Length: 229
Ligand SMILES: C[S@@+](CC[C@H](N)C(=O)[O-])C[C@H]1O[C@@H](n2cnc3c(N)ncnc32)[C@H](O)[C@@H]1O
Image (cartoon, rainbow, N blue to C red):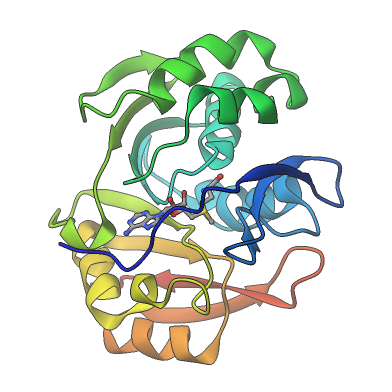
């Protein structure tokens, strides 16, 4: 299926307000995380409002938009700390290059330099095969567009981390959220940093019960959408 989005050629590291790095593009007029703090935003939205609420012994996570892998690393660190066991599926049709990932230095920044090698191996393997669990986290990267995902009842949490609707509207349609709804198991949740009214409405039309939660620093609200069947 086609996409209107073309990855920009001018991605450069950008230091956010909490000191952590993300990527920014002037062409796109957007960065991969909130400028108020990349680690702060990922921790607040995806780990605290998402992963920490999962009750299953082994949690199936689907990430839409793997990008720099920051959400993956924060999830992996929780697993290494013995707090969760996770099977992590990431969708990313435009994986970043090794030099772009190395320029960010996420593993050293998060004080887990030993993860660098296995992290790069997973981030750059687009064959869609599972990497066996290491430190409690199994991983596969599916190099596909969200509009091609047809999985059913397969995931407990969706980390929905697309670019904002005004940058990439095609990610925030009812068709996409119907796919997310089908992909989740009953009682599964989707979390996202975006709280726009339009997004809440399409999520509701797709069948979700949508909650507004306090957002990370710099953002008033975020959304958690539940599949209650
Ligand atoms: C906001 S960034 C993700 C940030 C990422 N989660 C991180 O921790 O760095 C959005 C990501 O969505 C990806 N993307 C673009 N079009 C997509 C599509 N059709 N399906 C899935 N992902 C897509 C982009 O390549 C980009 O990596």
